[in-house]
Image (cartoon, rainbow, N blue to C red; front, side, top):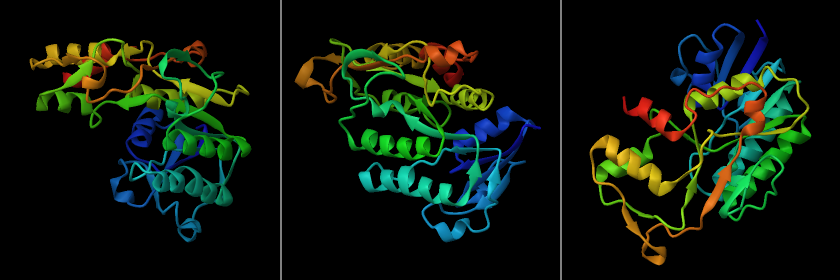
Amino acid sequence: MAGRLLIAGCGDLGARLHARLGGEWSVTGLRRNVERLPGGMDGIPADLLDPRTLDALPRDWDAVIYTATPGAFDADAYRATYCTGLAHLLDRVRTSRLLFVSSTAVYGQDRGEWVDEDSITEPTRFNGRVLLDGERIAREAGGVVVRFSGIYGPGRDALVRKLRAGGVECRRMPPQWTNRIHADDAAAALAHLLTLDADRRVWLASDERPAPKFEVLAWLAQRLGVAGPEAVDGEECEDSAGQGKRVSSARLRATGLRLQYPDFEHGYEALLA
């Protein structure tokens, strides 16, 4: 057994990681409602925003993964989760292996540029700025940051539900680049990073093929047997944002990570099945 692992803020991603690890680690999940943890996982009921509830938490762990997510999409909720909650946890526990789950929202590139671990991080939205603050806290504690692109999979199927509801509009040109990773591959990435001893402190985790949003919607619509997206231009589009970015996770894959779903077609085919 590799040791004692704490998954703080253990939700769907933590449950998938636990299933992937099998008996390799002794896994404990920390969340407010431990009844929602998967079977076979030890649980500690606690609220990361209330340090008093962390008093019963053992101090020493072989590894800690911080997977907490905010309950609302606003600056206060993000700061509470990614900064305050993390600081409370680090005040209580000690570990030589900390993984902090972040997001590619820390990149502000919006003209279809490729980004990797060395790309400049100048986010234009509050979520990216707060995540960078959380990353700084984790890295100052000796932790490793994992920046995931959009995670999809069972229970994370917004595009499928949107198409089934009908009336989807999307800009075709210039393309709006999208990046994603299947939830099972996200869990595999965390499991893989637990095995690495490299000094690198930031990793990107995404599938191998960024794709224009229109292409993804059109492919999904064909598989679902529903009307495809209506192509609109510029300001006519409900979502008239820029071109987005293209995320490269080549460095992580070069360490030996193999994705089960290397692109959106493989991932959504499995989801729809």
